Length: 297
Image (cartoon, rainbow, N blue to C red; front, side):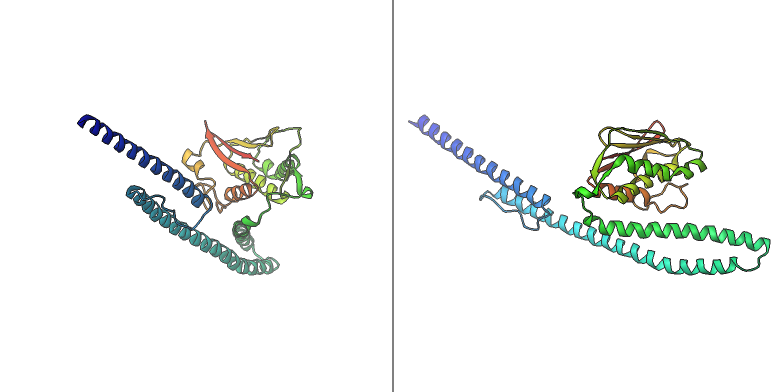
């Protein structure tokens, strides 16, 4: 009699454990679904607690605490990022006014009778002012782009359809004088298959121009540009002075390689922002002394 009693008790305990495990598993699956919805949907609601198991309740409470901390960190980041964008816009505006005045006074001075030394000094000042003006304009354009990137249309209308091939060709032609000055003869391989996308033509041209400008800064004297049959674009050049760490930071805003003068460090950051606004991907790789920047739309 006793063995049967013990056997029945063991069966009941096992059945109870199986039922408990089943409901725990069901609760955890429902919690997993809720967590995915909260994180992906940037939802502010708390994770619901399913069942009466103390362990599940404790787990849900811990997850809710971490979700609260995550939201606070995200809010701090967004506030800081918005403050930085506002500061960039204000600074660029503030710099434009005195620069315009300086340019005006320089033009007046250049119209006066000058000694040889005065001409030379004015030339130095003019070069520095033009460099500062260029950097200020780049800073202003960056602030405009990052402020408006959420308003960029990614699903264009038929009349917005452009040919990537022609935009790339025009961008290369526009850089011809700079290539000649740097004694660079680009190797160009553009697919004959026309690649059409619903993009903003100016945005795509800006991406290409910024990448080409970057190549002019870092190239050891060569450049290869390829547009494949799938619309992928790659820019490659030897850059023996770069390091893997520097390449990983190329798309970071305000990052400049130590010897990159007259640069805000915004060119590739802008290219990345615009590319992602058009639902594209951009990345950089560094292999055997060659820098590769690749675009995929």
